[in-house]
Image 1 (cartoon, one colour):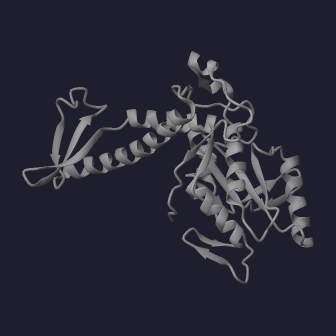
Image 2 (cartoon, helix red, strand yellow):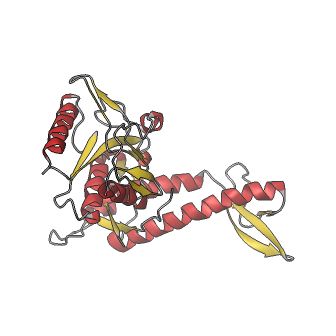
Length: 288
């Protein structure tokens, strides 16, 4: 999966989220001074006197230098991601990205599925253990398709938890959703079900029961739960999977949350261009 295509609202939100994050942390870089490694601070929100003309310089071997080194490493990683997204935005749209009104509020959120909801849920609650589990750096999965889904989520930078526990009061049923995914930039999470063995009778019955529970419990498709149907269970379509997840992410961002400049309304986009409204995100490397 060389490229990840971002819908325009997702791209705008990610850019603004990183921009605001950069504003809140010190900026700087590393260098050598008299043969010693130093960290140079050129901006510090807690120290207005610190600037590129009047930087603070610390030897990286000192206690304070070590602390600042961690902060500047974080800054450089965030800045690299921000610059990559900004370059992609400029090459695609040619106008300034919008400002985003954080925090983003949902018009309707019956289950209060925010970041706190995601953090409170325990993962790996499923009791069923397959004879031949799929082992990976993310842990054990029941199928290779679940592993590939986890890998795709990791590449998109979307945190997830595998097989949390969910109780449907309406049907008096307890289930373990495949994934709980977190769109942390908009303080929103949702369940994700990978459906790929509907030719098997028992699986199909369980899937129908699960979908019925989601429906009666007011978990709306594309909002509180994402269904990704794998038409060919033997060949995981990573591009299709990412499109489904990012499309849901995009739909959770209200248009009113974005504050566009006047130039936005003069853009003429061709309806025949299949890539219209999308840009690419550099895939992230797998991590545990």
